[in-house]
Length: 104
Image (cartoon, rainbow, N blue to C red; front, side, top):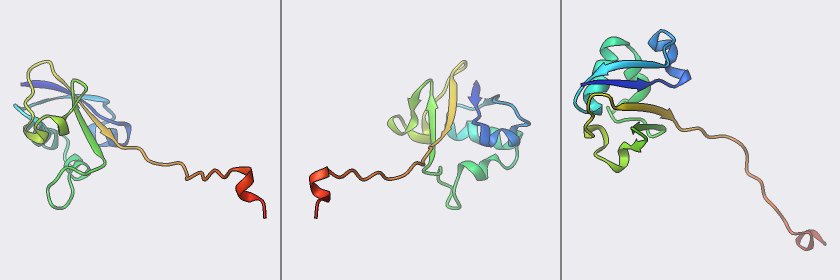
């Protein structure tokens, strides 16, 4: 199955600056094997040392989170769109106090 995969900016240097690539496979696992075959090194950015998808990487098939489907065994079909979305964290912790709490 030919499927378009959207590549996030931090990984585009591995896909020759392409924001979208076409790969083949019946499920996410096969798509990512083909993605690694076409763009060596991308697998290390998606998987940890144990071979599991990194926790901060979110994968969507047509806007459906694969964690609510069959994870890497989630099937794809021709024309589907897969998005790789890195989780974004940041900012700071803000603690709010009531004015009455601050009086000594």
